[in-house]
Length: 258
Image (tube, rainbow, N blue to C red):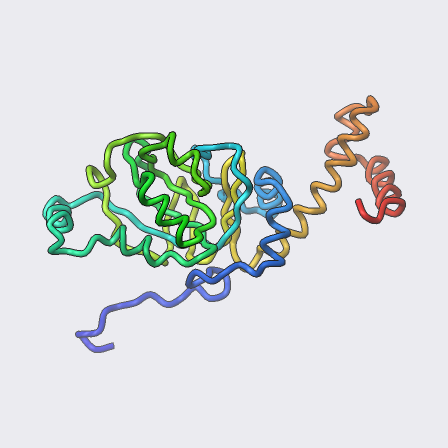
């Protein structure tokens, strides 16, 4: 490396996705068929204990589940001279440019270090993301015009509702790179799934296995709930003992479409 070449860290390889790529439709459908709590529980069992975005809640819990590859935005504390230049349009507004580049089907994921008391977006930006066919948004910031945004077609999982502009505290300086959101490491292209309970982030290379395990977990839980309804003690039914698992296997054999 010569002195005029910038230093760059080597890639992490297949463990970390390097860029935002669309989620295969079949995999997306499988992930949308299971709940966020199930996905979180399955990943916890796999040793992935930091995949749920703690403290972030959907603006509207009635929105459909969403799933997409993470289009990441990284925000840092604002520097006043740069903020003034952006306002005067003598420097580019990186947050707007980063959102304008969000690909269709992605989930916009912004990490700022946690600022629930300021707004990152409102109804105009939400309208723009809907026009771009973005699948959802996950923010560790707040949302302005929250009552309007909650009624719009875009699912938003965020830290709060506040009308104070994000320019009061943070500015976007990077996109399509690794970010941290509420203690969750999010690499561009990781898969984010959200529903009424919040959102989780799946490592891209493990998503197929997670989807398979989650579907099996929900089948087992449907069986367990049916047994609990008949009066089977919780301590016997869940976690299932050997007798319960034997009964479950018999049930699967007799109900192949379960």
